[in-house]
Length: 154
Length: 154
DNA sequence: TATTGTTATACTCTATAACTATA
DNA sequence: TATAGTTATAGAGTATAACAATA
Image (cartoon, rainbow over all chains, first blue to last red; front, side):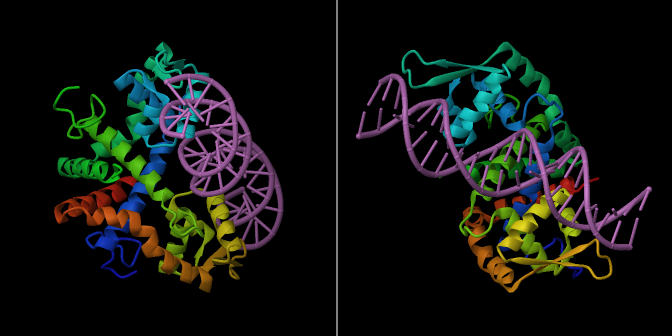
């Protein structure tokens, strides 16, 4: 491998447009896999935790709104909610004003687990962020903002 | 929600340590899903493409080296290689010096498909990167480098 | 008719455990 | 015994298509 290379690919210099695409994609896919594998609390998966965290923040939401927030298709949310309901962490109820809609809310157990889980679930990533200097953290913070805008459906 | 907030979570200010963890995780997971869903060429999945790209760059590698490069367990790589072999894009051969090892290489069809696919597969991400200004792209490039180091097993 | 959610089904990605062949 | 890879099995996450209930 030539000494000038900083990555695995011959066009992988992240300062070029093609290189940025390659490097960003590779880094993002690896990090996503790592995050999903962090299951310090065996009671809930990452997707489930994510739904509980939304409900904790926003309060009761319909299945459709949750799917939209998570950018998944409705059947995917139905499945996640089914699992959460089986575990006793959410309850589903018909909206009395529009009985097609299902309003989802945390149970007390769900409230407890999402609070208890947050710090443990964050441990892996937080530990690595702590190992960075403040300049690097600032760069990642900026990057997260840019990515959020990029990802938002146009 | 306080006006100072930039995100969905009450501790989601990416300038705080907890907020950075939350924002980065959310952005990374969404982007990873989007990238995996980009299958402009229906012949290969993203994981398969990724293996072909490595082989194109490095030349023939053992199954173990490929698993290490992709940071997956050996059986995961076995499965991906099996799929690629069925599709005629790689061939596997015993290493004559150590017959436990399997050396994997691109077939001519594999070489063709990885080249043909690269630009199409990159289209979604590249389009969005092109919409950014050069300062934002530089930030993402820096972030990709930082993430690469963070992710690397310690 | 249009919308909301569910069921049925299938595919991708990944893992762990147990095994085979070779060193 | 140790290593490289495979087979068997399972689970998470997601999708599309077809459907039911309600508006």
